[in-house]
Amino acid sequence: MLKSKSEYRASARKISIYNSLGGEKKPFDPIDKSPVNTEVKMYVCGLTPQDHSHIGHGLIGMRFDIIRRYLAYRRLNVTFVQNVTDIDDKIIEKVKTTGEDPIAMTRRFTDEFYACLGKLHVLPVDRLTKVTECVPEVVRFVEELVKKGYAYSTPEGSVYFDVSKKDDYGKLSNQNTSMLFESVRKELDKQKRSPLDFALWKRDESSSLSQPSPWGVGRPGWHIECSVMIHESLGDHIDIHGGGLDLKFPHHENEIAQSEAYSGGAFSDIWMHSGLLNINGQKMSKSLHNFIRFVDAIDTYGTALLRFVVARHHYRSAIDFADKLFRDNCNSLLDFHRLFGRVPDAAVSSSLMEDSEVSLLLEQFEIAMDNDFNAPEALVALEQFRAKIVATLDKGGDVTAEIKHRVGVLKELGQILGLFFDSLDEVESQGLSWLGKSLGVTPIEPKEIEALLAERVAARAAKNFQRSDEIRNDLAKRGVEVLDSKAGVTWRFA
Ligand SMILES: [Zn+2]
Image 1 (tube, rainbow, N blue to C red):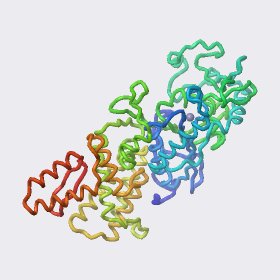
Image 2: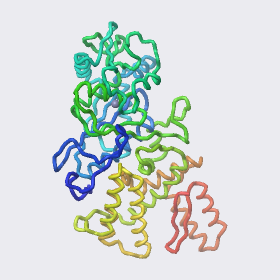
Image 3: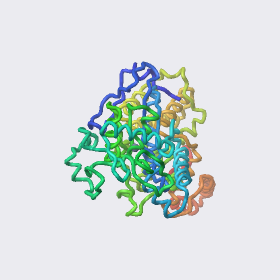
Image 4: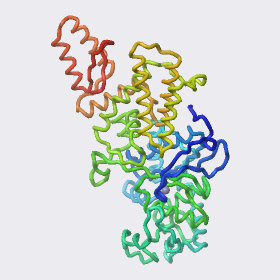
């Protein structure tokens, strides 16, 4: 895999990251001060597997995969941890109605989610932590918070975090406690000292997931799980904590309060939040019945196009899943793969790394990605580079060692953005399948197109222009645009 020229610590340029905590973009300074092979501790909140995962979960997986891959390209040694919230109110409610064993159900949905990520070539996590596997650790952590005076237990056997004991509570979402008082539900929970206090341990004797604790049988609250799993797997101080924007408050705010109260020091240096996902301009929500399951999104759009539209957006911006987005991008994706098809033995050559065109591309790519992982700008640099190579080949240029090297570099830089893992055949089939569905017609196979194009060439040679036009129009209805040029007949997505 392609790597940047120098070690991150020795490199003149640093990656700037927008930190949600403080709301500023700053040069990234990892906690580990080693000059080489610098470690980066990264954690991204994972799934609550009470149902099939949806495309919003998938989006976060793909976005943080680009970030992780780029950090590795810049010679940073990333340890990536993610959790599964397999004890949760929603899970317990669900199995009460379905009667399924909660462990079996959460494993099924968790496996489905990571299988989807695998199909999209999202790198596997270094460590997947599950709440069911760390309840004694949660109990110890909560005991420590009680001992330090940050938490209190109630006569009923629950434990709450006392928000009034943490002066800087609200620093991530930039709200002070009086503002927060306005935003929380003033439910009359007589056990809580303040409506802002949140549960660390919930008394519950009814669920098979409950376990004993000094406060009686119960289970962890949601927020404490992440704090404990980070403490157990990465330690008290980490470099990057990520998640969806919807988790910023209260989940991430509460994680900070718990972890910093526990350790007495800083928790995560950088907080990164992925922008939200809309479906045809609307928020994805149960009430609007517009949920797209992750498995269905892969089936509908195909792996290659899905990753391409994700790379087309900055990770902090919102993304709107509408047909137009996929239609606008399918031919650019196809153009890359058609080039890879023309240069099948493309490979990065270490002896050609000083090639001036490649040096320029690497610089453009790195400047874009160093600027808070600006993947869309990096992708434009790749598109321009592709266009230059295609122009050379179209003029009758040979596939030289230099061209093979340039295409090899193009491919490997694309892979940092999560692209170009599929073959040309797969990209054509997936695109035609999606276009067919989107147009409401039976999808056509690439082989069928080739046969029709050959028939059209023969019809034209026989001056049967009626048949030739018929073929062109039929293909157009099925999402295929026929292109006649001096070099011959080709097709693109219509
Ligand atoms: Zn979390």
